[in-house]
Length: 144
Picture 1 (cartoon, rainbow, N blue to C red):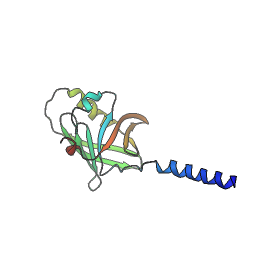
Picture 2 (cartoon, rainbow, N blue to C red):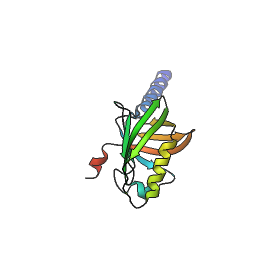
Picture 3 (tube, helix red, strand yellow):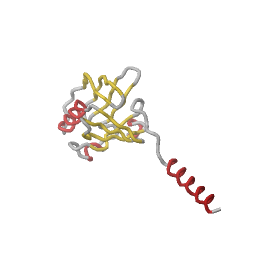
Picture 4 (cartoon, rainbow, N blue to C red):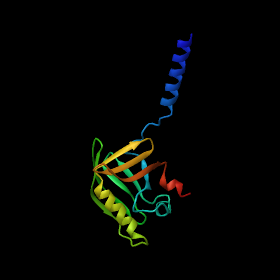
């Protein structure tokens, strides 16, 4: 009887642990907002709901998004966990705190890999963490 009880308790514990893990969101079709990056303070990241956001479109392998000032767009290439951005273009408005935009764009140029766990996206350069993002439902809807 003790063995049956112990087996049932073990099975229950394993089921409870497995059920708490969130399935990783897809890179493509998700809106990602910067959560943390060394060169950009949280105050600048959180100033607007759509500051420092990314969206990936699988249909045409295009990435688009916004820094704290300008919108950007370009191609990306995926090979497993490898990710590279190519030919990024952007609008060219002058804004205060342009150093944050410059740091963000430089980071995108350095990305060579990514990892998604649940609702978190991380960008890497030679396994060095560059930036962390969080999934958002709809950055435009958050402004309301």
